[in-house]
Length: 146
Image (cartoon, rainbow, N blue to C red; front, side, top):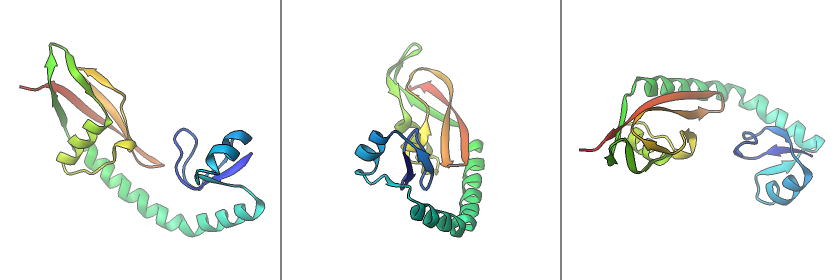
């Protein structure tokens, strides 16, 4: 079953992508939730026209995302957490990384950060998706709080 996504869907695609899914997933979840529409020939024509009109706006968005990516690469992020030896009391998640970025002047939503759950001190790297075509690797370090 072919559908057109109306918004980004994790592990499936981005807004305005034409994707093929199993009929039950499309009919029972994506379409009723308002995440997708059925890809009829007329809907495909409308999508093509919208993409054509939006092409120059995309170039500006990608340029803005690249400037933010360069700013993120220049940051040195250290997250101080309580620890006993090498192990942390609790864990460091995407929300903690987003808060550290916020304190450094970069406002990135936690859902665009992929790092996993960290439970030990050390140096790690997170992937930050600024745009569908711009993904930057962000190094950070977990240190023990004094």
